Amino acid sequence: MERLKIATVWLGGCAGCHMSFLDLDEFLIELAGKVDVVYSPIADVKEFPEGVDVCLIEGAVCNVDNLELLHKIRARSKVLVSFGDCAVTGNVPAMRNQFGIDNADNVLQRAYVDNAQFNPVKPTTDGIVPALLEKVQPVHEVVHVEFYLPGCPPPADRIKALMVQVLEGKTPKLEGAQLKFG
Image (cartoon, rainbow, N blue to C red):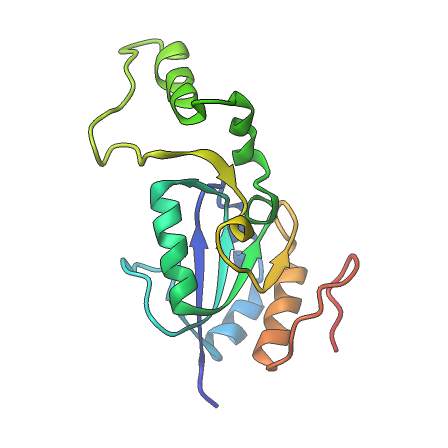
């Protein structure tokens, strides 16, 4: 059997979903025997590869770098999983949407000028802070997503249930408090 190529991605969020993924403990060893992790913040890979079977995406779409990467991921992946509440709903990163018109400029003003104790200036040089989108969005508002794995973060047993079904070639059934096998 050919090994699945999986990827995990961290957009605008806190890395809690990846921490929960690492909480798979011994299952990570079993998983390592069945998949190739081809891209992840826990692996030193710089470019998102072609031919990814399953990609778990943590975080909301907050800036132009997130947007560009997300379109690349969709084009190069068979299955996308919105991984955690930020990816599913926008959650905490989307709280900045309340700043309304000129959202991105208002956020930068608030963070770098209004709340600064020293050197109150907005970063304007390219490459320092990626350009913010006017509105933070959940992943499915930007690209098609096959599955949603809610939770802040999703518990390791739910992640395991999803991965077991994927490894068995089944369409994951995401029902109720626990994922159902079947």
